[in-house]
Amino acid sequence: MTLPQTTLGIDVSGKRLDAYAHPAGRVRDFSNDPAGIARLVDWALTLEAFVVLEATAPWDQALLRALETAGVSFHRANPGRARDFARSMGLLAKTDAVDARMLALYGATLPLVPTPSADPARLALQGLTARRDQLVEMRKAERIRLKGRPDPDLIDSIGAVLSVLDDQIAQLDKRMQALIASSPDLDRQQAILRSAPASARSHARCC
Image (tube, rainbow, N blue to C red; front, top):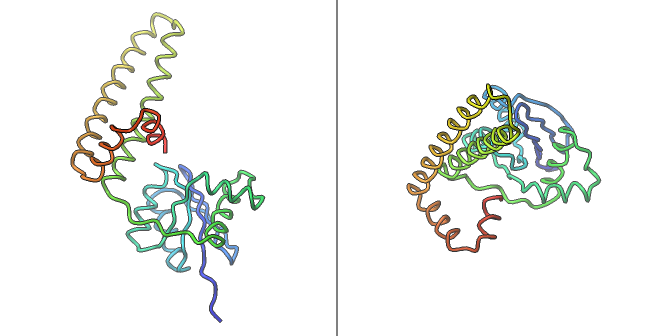
């Protein structure tokens, strides 16, 4: 009798990787660092598992690269579609363990297509974009503090932080543009976005 393939659902967070192996029902958790990722990949190889995880950049990037390097087949799920499946299965209780089980069932129930190997340039751009978004949020927070009429002794400090953030964001913009220019696929995509309506460009940046 042929045993069903193991589907390994992984819930990814900044510090932890919660994994659920279906149909065996085995549960393990790993640290989201090189050592923990190596142990998780070894487990996936031992199980000969098909891995399912939600897209959670930048937290999933190191795991994705490790899975690709090891030759482990995986599906990087759209979070909205995974949530729809969870709702249909009554699995919307928000805990990491439940999410890992839901993702394993998602992969075992539906004919998910393995995610193709990512373009290194695209992965690098995702990392730069995520970092830029973080700095932009930090800049917004500092500007709000400045508008709140802080103590005069703090104005210089806030101004200095804003200057550093402006410089860092500008540097990231230059690196992103250089990366796009060096990649035909990314350059082509940006050209398409430039020609699209503003609403479509906004949606593309958010997805």
